[in-house]
Image 1 (cartoon, protein in one colour):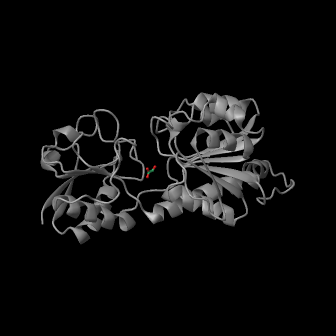
Image 2: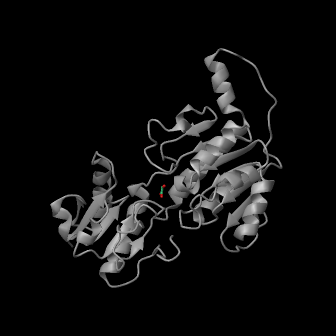
Image 3: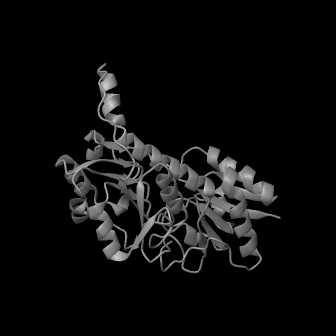
Length: 314
Ligand code: GLV
């Protein structure tokens, strides 16, 4: 079966494209990936993309399906990027949730166990212990309780944090987690938790949800971890909250503008740990089958799984 797939991940090397080509061909023999920006992609039926250039998808006259190369879709749902009649799916891969939960645990424990302090001491050859902080009973909020957030929250509870989950609408309570929802629940968690983990999708409602007021509402010494999207944070508000000493620091994997510009003040704030958007990388090895299934469904005139609700934004 021939199937032309336009590919774009914003990377200059084509190694990842080759990985997708090999994995997808195992399920869709004869499929062919071509760079979205090439003329050869004009007849593509499928677009497999991360942050496609504005206007390019609208030029693909045979396009039947867009696939976000990731769990988030905000990089595709920018006005002018995705024609209204084209269904969009996102990747929902337990391996990515697993990777993201490892990253959050790493960030939370690195803070709690004074990783940055001891690394700085080691640089100066200082061998000096500080009192060890415990996870037990420490209140931690996970904002975003979809498939990924729930896995993260459960694992953090397993290592002793008292975990509170927040979602837009009500979700069932579980024995290990306390659930909160809506604006009231959000405000309640801001002021009652010591660690704050953002895993939210980026929508109009979550843009700059962590602003000056949100950081001010957190208890003094609170810590912020962002594995969601950079634009959920008012970056100057976070910087100000950290510089003033109100917020102890932050670990960030995502930024309003990526790559993080050279002259961004975050680089100069030692209490901010910067990761280059690698907390969970899309892996064709584990995700190719669901992408192939979606392609097969759409070509057969059926609805694919993991279809994005364009109204809701995820
Ligand atoms: C990564 O940020 C993703 O959306 O999968």
